[in-house]
Amino acid sequence: MMKTEGKTPEEEKLPTGEAKKDEFNLNVEEMAKAGLHFGHKTSRSHPKMEPYLYGARNAIHLIDLEKSKEKLNQALEFVKNLISENKILLVIGTKIQSRELVKNFVKDCNLPYINERWLGGTFTNFGVMKKRIDYFKDLEKKKAGGEFEKYTKKERAEIEKEIKNLERKFGGIKNLEKLPDAIFVLDMEKDSLAVKEAKKKGVKVIGISDTNVDPTLADYPIPASDDAVSSIQYILEKFKEVILKAKPK
Image 1: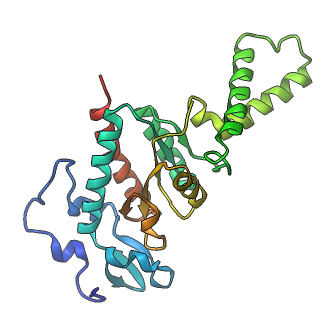
Image 2 (image 1 turned 45 degrees about the vertical axis):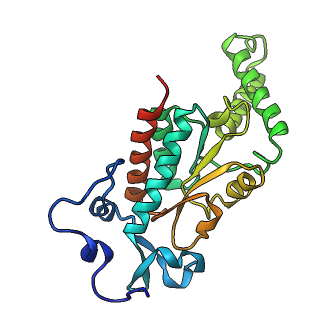
Image 3 (image 1 turned 135 degrees about the vertical axis):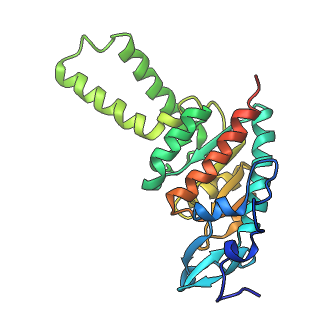
């Protein structure tokens, strides 16, 4: 039974002194400092998140950080194996506070990403999407080769506008030649369509699972706040450490 009063999980469960660390250097004290345990209002709770909840305070659900640690360990182990086998991980984070975090993360890890709007059919109609991506790459190539110099200023401005629009839509996946092996979703409610399409196409789903989402939609759910920038940053840093170590030399 969940506790509703008294100490929070980080206050009650932590051992005295240095917290015990594991292979991926996780400990609940650091997770608590990053705010991973703060969920949404109790009125917005998804019933399938019940096993991952510790209690509530001021009508806000608290996530059990021991469960978060366990699930994050499983997700990191999966990613370590995925990357070591040279498979593809696509990162998806379209919420405003996640966009820059995603760009910095994928730049360091050299991963495909989507941090604007998820376009319906990206997975379920990948053939058509790939044609649009190829068209975008062709425009970039022609621009770099000076092929548009013969056009009028107005025509060049229109082409430039189209390239920028396509860059916003497809820039992070322009080198994706096939469906990824897995996706890492930073907010499974905001990008629920991406999760649904991944499930339909047999693409594994790693997802941060806040208290308002169904964690069973992910193959590797990570019970944690998907709103707090510090929570997202903490999780991304752990993924970054694992990915950089696992990449084939």
